[in-house]
Length: 78
Image 1: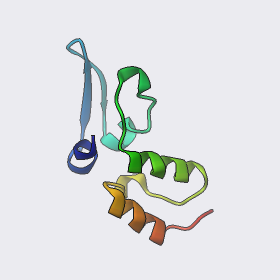
Image 2: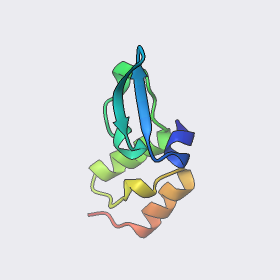
Image 3: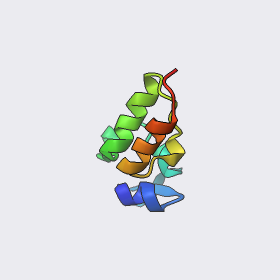
Image 4: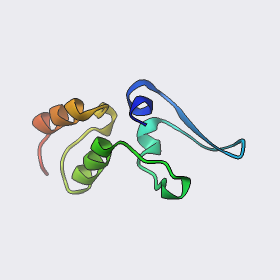
């Protein structure tokens, strides 16, 4: 899933040949995907938790660990 977040503009999830989700990777990874057995990248999960706890993080910029660190350096806790 790292490659999907880093290199894709669009993610399509199929179930038995039918499209069940068609989203940007950032929007997809903000959904509860446990029933689909899809794991989101751990660094993105950390970014989501930090954002929910008041950190100013632009999730669109989080493509890997380094970009998450860059977001944290530039962002402010609100």
